[in-house]
View 1 (spheres, one colour):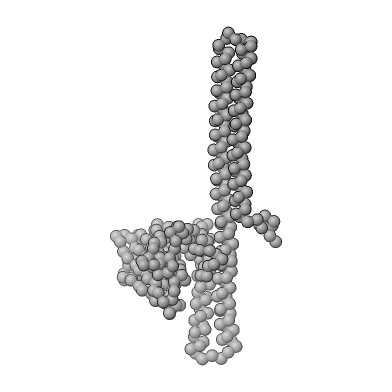
View 2 (cartoon, helix red, strand yellow; view 1 turned 90 degrees about the vertical axis):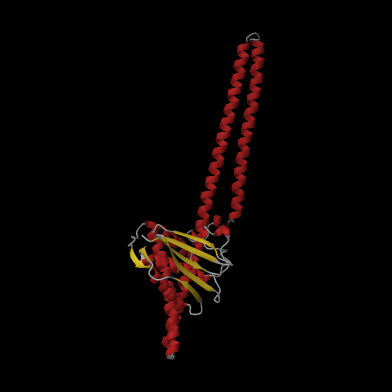
Length: 326
């Protein structure tokens, strides 16, 4: 059951928050003006009293003026201090609350996406098995149905791996097992698996043989799978996906380039945040959970590497993964 405050629009809450902040600053300014005026009136009153009682004593007038100046400086100092503390506190509270709200919305979208991602492969696999049980099909048809079921099962397995690994890497419960492995063979094997799953797609591969990397092959392959999966997901079927592997001194560079719609400049760094997905959630058609690039970033950082995204030419996106060989 939704709470009453859950029905209040976030934009309305922002307006109320900033109105209260403006009111608080106005009240602080009014307090300062009132105190300053009272200080001036007190100066006039004390000067009149001195003139009546001790008109020939110049030190008394100077003492009254000095007290007035000290009070004026005190009010200015206190007012500025309260103003700075109020503004800093307001900005801090606003940023924290806004970040929490955004994180809550991303988690909500993530749960919706995960639910959809889980239901689809389960439904397809169930339908495939029921079809095989109820109908006597020829060998070619059976092979196709089994292939579809296996593909959906692999998607489900990849999703579960992403979720589990994300939790383990964040909590420090996953221990890396680094060793030298054939990075060229790993990349070629990963591309071949995608080619088998998506026979209609075009994959252009530029991978020299014999390149060795020191790291955990399972995790590096997971990074590559996430990047290729995104390239396949966000591009049309008739445009190629380019996968490359290059060597620079003691560093290997893995690139995955597509000719899709690209990523807006303002969102290039956000795509590596947890649960973040490009575009409006209500209008987005592509499947996903927003964990792939976040998890890839964690894995690459744990391998002392760097992952980045750039514009492809003439259109599209290029993801680059720099990894030290040792």
